[in-house]
Length: 480
Image (cartoon, rainbow, N blue to C red; front, top):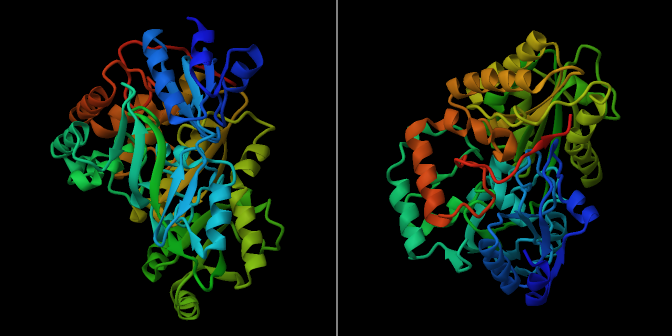
């Protein structure tokens, strides 16, 4: 492998030094894989030349955005391609055209100046990139009203494994192959939930005009996304945030089924451990909170809310500063949950993104508590209650890899029984790829293999993610 040949052929940078490879061997997960090379392209031609070089040298290629992923999606042993320089933004009336390397935080600032916003809003928004959001089908708190990335993805431009540029939707051979495979899918075998990032989203494609949706949640396994067209919305004239308190998580979960009928823009759950990091006073009997946000018919909806809930209205805010402060506290839940668990050891983020139909939310929360008690682990829970999507953090000083897998298998078995998904918005990555077949069954999993083979017959792109190949290109190390 002659690295100098690649460096001379592209305008970007090629790194093979120890420190850079170490930096790119980790993301926000607990996994570590040392890559062979890191390429930071400046142009699309650089990406094409990198793919051709990788093919010649039998190296895998894995795209990387902000490195905020929790399940190791951006880690692999071949070439890591950092798309930071693909940062162009063009704003139109109802959509925005963005490069894959654009940080969501920067896009938000620019859109706000135009009175617009992007619906999906992951809590790591200031740091994650649009390419990464597409790769995992990211969502966030306001996906309850505005949908996940897949629901707002109008067009995607990518480079295929063979080095060809592909735009979807289009009437190309690959697009027609997607539609053909999508027609073979039993949609009843897919999770019956409002958000899903597990496997390939063949269920979202019903005709050629929807073929761009197959790239959402594909984690760079079907192509290198270079740009996308995304739907945007007018900023609401007013928002109001109501904080509800509950004496039990079951009571809160039951209320969620009533609250969603009012069409809130967000409905979030925070457990008692996460509450400790919010600088506010709560009655001692309160064990969990619901954040309820409205951005339309605010006065009427708050009045209706007070009449249907079993919980207590603890706080109510309509000024931007207070609302932003409380959302900052909620969006810091990942950081605080990991900080609170440092006295133990945080277990890998495997069961941290389960999503179930809303009527099963109470069952999911109680299952998490039961799992923690059974295995003697510490537990922190928070998440997007309105979507039935709860982030579960576990920690223990002495749990081995075998026990972690046992916990995951038992937990996912129950989630699937509830017609839920093992991941609602964070993707499969290293952590959950081995459970994808369990989620979908043999027939659908074989369709995933066929789809992967159509786009990437030589398994060049981010191998061992979503579908497991017969032979792995690299080993992952668990940082426990």
